[in-house]
Image 1 (cartoon, rainbow, N blue to C red):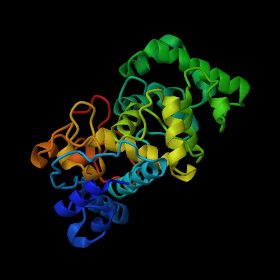
Image 2: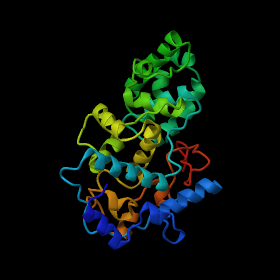
Image 3: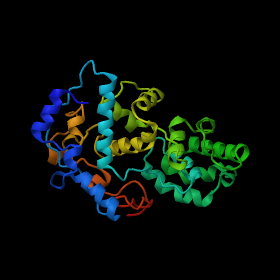
Image 4: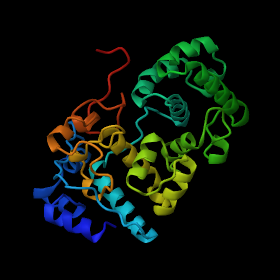
Length: 316
């Protein structure tokens, strides 16, 4: 819940809110583009909201109650759902094994680079049994573009052998089993559970942790503690999609070094407004992926994604 002061300012500046976003004449650009894409399967790039410049950051009460924090956080989630109705995992995969492998490869690199690398990898090793029998040096060459390829090869060989020997060649659908696999931590396990098995999970990557601290949901730095705090704020049914929305926002608008505050559709709700570029025109130039009219990270995005597919590795 925003403070009375912040609420008054939002009303005075007529900054778009969820209520106003539902009115045709005041719908934000990003929300409108997302809704249209979902309804018509359009491939036109989404456009970010033309946000009204907010004069200062929203002031979160020093002694904000837990109830007030929950209300404020859930409102941000609802607004993000309007902006990114098409939010999804940005790794290409066709089954739990491919998602598990792709997530392990995504450490210290972009999802785009992983998506450009995995087609050749899965063509060579389509099953855990195939991958477990791979020649390490040959696998290293295939995944070299993702970086740290020797360590990642060791993890992939180990987890594939474990799947073959301990789980009948199938990816397990339990957190306690997944985290026992080589190279698989809690974040990777939650990605797989939420997106391959439909088991709710919170994915605390660098984007998620950075944004929830900017929004003052928590001051925790440890991913496990961040996960516990956020899990207490939201119902379990929201965990997986909340993760996608927050990560989408962090990659497209709320960047680490220079967030595009002036083009942010949730600016009136953000206690850290002003850390980045507040001029709307300059801020729009900072937008990435479909928000900026550029290709996304997936070579094979879902049908309702409003942006352009990413190019294959080596494509012009």
